[in-house]
Length: 254
Image (cartoon, rainbow, N blue to C red; front, side, top):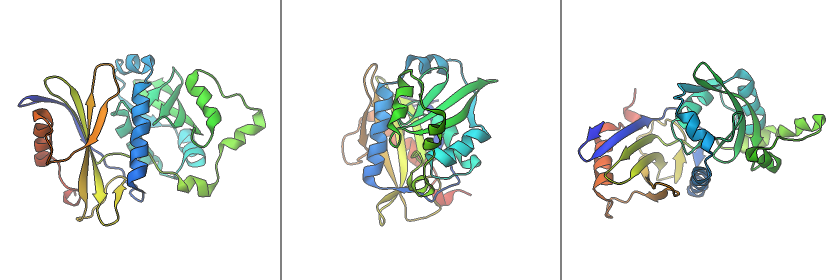
């Protein structure tokens, strides 16, 4: 869609029906850094796979059980499917290492297969941050464990509940200007509690905090927080103006 001097390629408001999670400033920054690392290490197979125009992504019931045993926090199958549908549309989040193994945010290791144009996540092994041995799987190796040690992939209920789900922006906008491709992410922020929310939150005292990614041909994207008072460039200013007219605040949604 052409809007003045910019071309809007994709925009989306994320709605996930599990909004009990919040993120501090440092946690959000850590997650963003993991994603940027993933972008710089993206495998060739991911690019060729995207060209096949996969129609969507979903989890099997087995993967759902393994998420609630090995990944955490405990979530419903509906919430997980909605979350992964949003993550699939952001190419710097999911990395397909080979024809069976993938990672999410350079941390969560999963297996997948193709079924009638859909990407099907079949199981989760765990988080590399909790189980470093999983890092070998992202380098083309297979996890070599004695049969009884597979139980070690499960983590305690308390540790499960201490995990945070992958952060999703409330709004994502991908657009291009005359020279570069950009992505805008807006997060729901509570200035009183100084936390970012996950998913939909029907509160009127929230602010939208914005981060802007600038993508270059063969380099890591540059990310910075939106500051209205600074010079941001015509393309970014136009995109922000368009968002202000299109995006409804959370408490305006029915």
